[in-house]
Amino acid sequence: MVKLENINNISLSDSVINLDHGDPTAYEEYWRKIGDRCTVTIRGCDLMSYFSDVNSMCWFLEPELAEAIKELHDAVGNAATEDRYIVVGTGSTQLCQAAVHALSSLAGTQPVSVVAAAPYYSTYVEETTYVRSGMYKWEGDAWDFDKKGPYIELVTSPNNPDGTIRETVVNRPDEDEGKVIYDFAYYWPHYTPITRRQDHDIMLFTFSKITGHAGSRIGWALVKDKEVAKKMVEYIIVNSIGVSKESQIRTAKILNVLKETCKSETENFFKYGHEMMKNRWEKLRGVVKESNVFCLPKYPEAYCNFFGKTLGSYPAFAWLGTKEETDLVNELRRHKVMSRAGERCGSDKKRVRVSMLSREDVFNVFLERLADMKLIKSIDL
Ligand code: PMP
Image 1: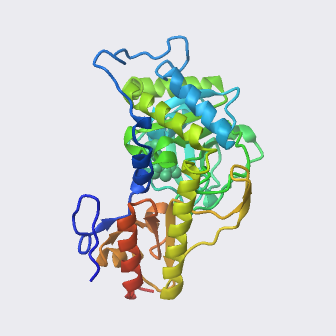
Image 2: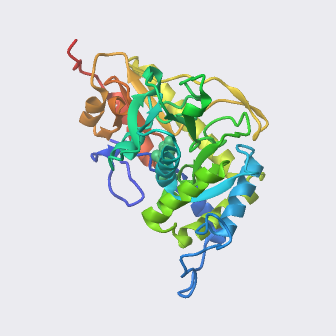
Image 3: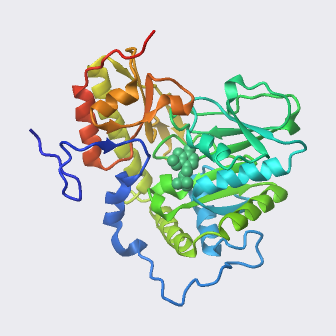
């Protein structure tokens, strides 16, 4: 039997592998090679104040992070940053809640309905229900939504979990009733072709899924409307009195290295990430084809303005389905693979979300286990 090792030298051959969360450890190897160029030294006397820029509306945003964010979006061409407020958050998780809060508090009537088209990112459900706010109410699948009154649609593109390119699905003649929060966590060239410079009122981004530095917990929102940005800032003040400066400084440093190397032939992170994701997807598609019981979505090719050529999509999650009547999350669990149940994403038992961003050795174990799987019919019809 092949001996499978992870970097901590623990044998993987019998252990349960967790591909439920999208923990982006796949990129560690790249950053190891980059070495000390991303090292940040912080002395005991540094970064002690709550404040970063007292003249800015988002006074806890480090100016060098704001600059790095603008320059990176400019270099990649995926989003407009001009005439917008940047709001930094403890991950885009905090910003999504801040945005829902801001839009709801500015709406004429409450509770404001919150919807997302299924299959949706399951965390939106927890984010909008956990604190039992009276200002907004999770109403589930946007495809079925027909309630009157103000609403917020969460649009994730490329979508988590299924990798599709998304637009709004709720169409109301009275535009004032509907607000949209665009979650562009995966709108970066290693996952999908950059076909346009996004230019929406509220756009969320996360450091976690660009470079893999999820542990820094940094996200940012690009917000057109001043009142909305103000309310988001207020929410973050009440929630955490700002965002860690150590994390912001480290993020700025890494985003600068990302920008500096992103035109390089040898060190381009996006090229590295793109090749890695393409390779993983090709291997996964190979196993799925051989198996004859699994299925995966197909993605159209498109011209990528960043790479200057036509390319496919290689999402951060595989939206794995089965042709059998089976509870796929349990079947995978029997084979020591943890995944996210389709039902949690507003879909069904025959689908699961599997992270494509694990370390290489874990990914290879997943492929081996998938190839070995024989499914048991388990859904009562
Ligand atoms: N949005 C989407 C679509 C995501 O997949 C994630 C991470 N799983 C997030 C937001 C949150 O990212 P973070 O809080 O790490 O910035």
